Image 1 (cartoon, rainbow, N blue to C red):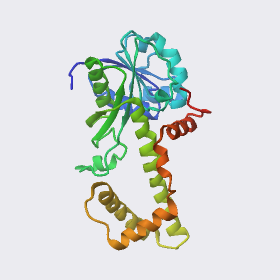
Image 2 (cartoon, one colour):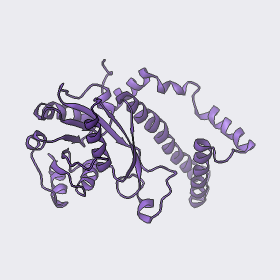
Image 3 (cartoon, rainbow, N blue to C red):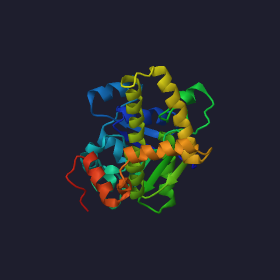
Image 4 (cartoon, rainbow, N blue to C red):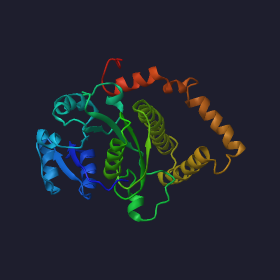
Length: 285
């Protein structure tokens, strides 16, 4: 990546994601402006040894403005800040929902980008205790990131990728997609499906312990190990499932999964899902 340094403004620097982003940026050579409105967030930023800047000053000369704020606040935040940004600057959101839904304030001479972390892979070959402890990413365990930018300018893509690699460090690869494709990945693939299955596994664990009376340590051990086998076999084909397992899997699919479940990948279902997440009646186009 480019060794060029940039001026980066972080909006919401004292929030949960804002602190993660800021903790990584402070280790770079970039000029970083930290902006936070909430009292608690301001205190966290100051206690971390960072100087606060007012929003207007921070975005005025920024090459890229990172919006580490909740989805529901992005419409009002961009309405306030985008008009104050310099021509040619980039506004970067960390989730695709609001950008896909068209909720962000835009300007012809301000470039819109979105980036989201992949989080460390379940198949990552971790080497240290710090990497094992970092399940979310952005601290010690390497991860990939997904990015989308509404520009074909190579210098803009370098700016965005440099920023993405900095805020989500350590990053292995940055994968480029469209805003719509990123929305199809997050939430549909990873939240609607993968996170839902993760929560379903926990519910099943509780049923085994509380309803069936299995000792919790035994239930956790067999579930954790078989979850790894299930993912390795299902996603990578490491080993074939046994014939008996395949029969049990068919029973599980018939009992739990709706026949039309793949409808969630349709555009109209994506719009319905995002409208619920953004507390909208509908996604307007």
